[in-house]
Image (cartoon, rainbow, N blue to C red):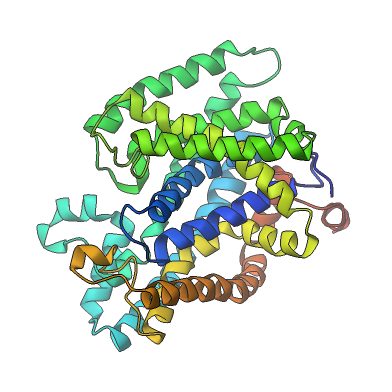
Length: 401
């Protein structure tokens, strides 16, 4: 297993972290648990930390010394076009399913489609009659993360080129991070709620800039050299510290604060949570990587994080209907809030729905890979090369074609 970041190889442990992360996020969305119980708090704390880790790893895997124009074409355009097409596909077939099974009308489908793309924060400003959407919207709502990633990528690359590179030193980077931290506080306090995660774009930029600086220092490669026993203890301590921070000042991290709007403390807490959780997840991924069969499957899932993020909820609805279970996160986020007792049967059925929803994404994404290669083959190859994902065989094939 090659761990160096080069044009030919990728750090497999990064893919494993992402694979574990998207499966945990799917648990967050699909599996029922008692509100504010220990399992619920653990799932929520890890789920929201993983969003920050995804951005940090995105900054880490972005290869430096590439023209910004090429990056926009390969990363932003190469990311957003397939996502938009996938979302339209899901709206069409998800809408058709809701018409057949959930008494939706065509108007209901169009309504949820508008709310999905505009988000309720904007659609309700246009007309108060739009409401917050229905089952279709709620189970397509993870798309907010993609729009947020697109905005962050848009700002990240020119900012990185100004602050990170040979001869620039660390001061421009430090000054930019402090500036983003300073503007994040009033945005967090006074601009909530805002659609597409726009309220917290500065902190996402901080994570990507930290990832870029970590790459310069080869932090993940250095973590690969930590012996297993110290790595085990570091993992336990980091997970415990992360959960302690969540209990102290976390309820969906910086989206909702346990003690209300606390400005700088909220922003500082979530940054600290992500930095503490990263080595724990990485060491855990390194341990998983020792089991080749398990590592291969989870790393494949990690390479298809965005596709699973988009599809797992809508597939979860199908399986919830099949097993006659309550839909989550549709009309019932927590059953207790609706006066419905949470039974072992409901929990077990939701776990089964989670397993089947994630598993069903795999053949769909395999087919989608083939379709994307036909439609966006050049863009995808450029993106792989830019992020250091191409194998030696792919490089040779590209150079001789």
